[in-house]
Image 1 (tube, rainbow, N blue to C red):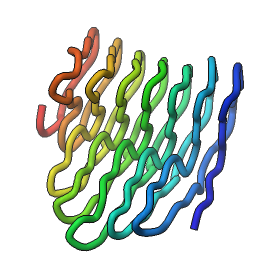
Image 2 (tube, rainbow, N blue to C red; image 1 turned 120 degrees about the vertical axis):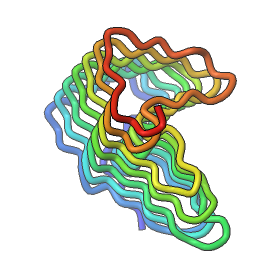
Image 3 (cartoon, rainbow, N blue to C red; image 1 turned 60 degrees about the horizontal axis):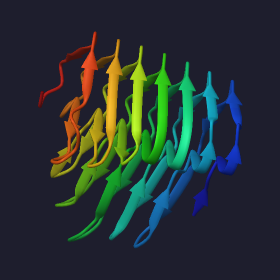
Image 4 (spheres, one colour; image 1 turned 90 degrees about the horizontal axis):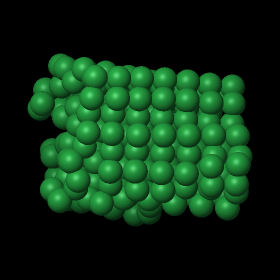
Length: 212
């Protein structure tokens, strides 16, 4: 079962504003799912403004791999401002190897993202058994992320080996946070994968994250 809400692909200067993007839904086993709410691929100078991305879900069983229930983006340059990404969920259950969940709220692979005056709240990765759950709020793999004047709060990775509940910074990714609050994420507020460049955090609050 697949229901994706918005697709931006091979496009330039596209603009989303004032939208509620909700109800994206993928469900299955032994497959890979990408972006049930918003799927972005090879978009140049896209803008997302004053939008809410909420209640998008990916469910799976054995051998399911899930990226970005709220938003997934590949090889794109995006500016997001005055937005809320909240209560998006990856939920994978199964047998000996359930799968892996990456970035329930937002998953970025390559490209450049700027996020300002936005809220990343209560997004959840649940992965059963001995599998991986990474970056419930934001996961970036390659590319760059600059986030400012924003809140990353109460995002949760639920798994045997959860990593990076608030933000997960993968290898070859570069990230900065300015005037942000990263708080009350039950595991890591920020997790840097071994070998990734140092993240620059300035004039920000990192507080109440269990693993920090």
